[in-house]
Image 1 (spheres, helix red, strand yellow):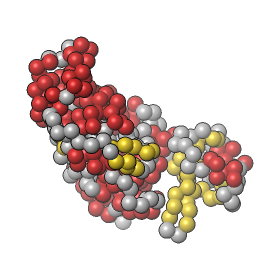
Image 2 (tube, protein in one colour; image 1 turned 120 degrees about the vertical axis):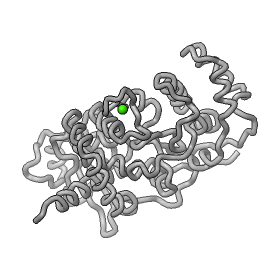
Image 3 (cartoon, protein in one colour; image 1 turned 45 degrees about the vertical axis):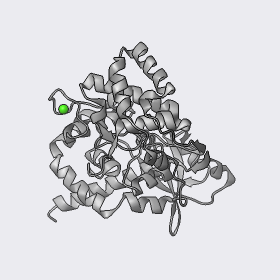
Image 4 (cartoon, helix red, strand yellow; image 1 turned 60 degrees about the vertical axis):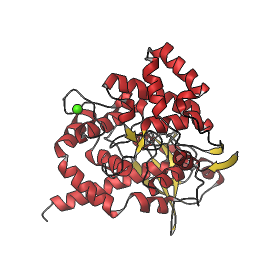
Length: 353
Ligand SMILES: [Ca+2]
């Protein structure tokens, strides 16, 4: 047995992205974790898996034979445990993280993705109230617009994490069940689907529970296809945002300045993703917020480390909604800034002056 430290969500995400493999948004790991040594036997013969199969048969009426066949073909992937357990090489701060996700190719490929999917993006904006640049940026950050959607069998990935990764076993056993339900509902072979090492699938990297709850058939062909159909992927991301309370009309973040990082402020900076302090209260504590900002709005105060020093930002309700996709302020800020870079570039390209 080996003791391995796993870093924060944002570092985890970064490493995953650095490796070209994508973590499920909204899933992240922290703390001291234990990685357990390998067992060579196939999953179908494990007592633990037999117990799980019993449960699926009893609770959801699945065929035991079918499940045994699936688990006879599923195997533990050491690489998945490695990716889950990989220690962070160094702490990633905002400017380092930003450089990876808000890069030139992601902006220019985003312009192309937008152009190619303009009708679907406009319709999604109208129906769900989510601006095209936000949807484009999510798909850009998650999979580089579908270029990197993950090459692990979803059953392999979820089984490995459910049965050979004790720190998150319960969560991933739940996702494995969701995957079997999804397969049954959609008439798919559970072994046919591929995704990230955490079982996230398609353009927007939905885990099975998110697929079941939020994926939509946005082109009306009767199938919710987030794997190959960009229109469905766009509608699904927009629906995810709408269902998590996206408002759209108001600002997402606002750059602010502080006189001093007082101890009062220090205790609140980066302390939570959810906006819980009013603009009026921030003002009283010495945060210089734009004069037009409504005093009663709730915001969270963030410190973002740049090469030249700290930047301070207020995050409003929609910022919090972005963190529902991946519980990380760096992630949400990167998505938002990428969205703005794409929108700005597109406007300058479209504008003949
Ligand atoms: Ca469809």
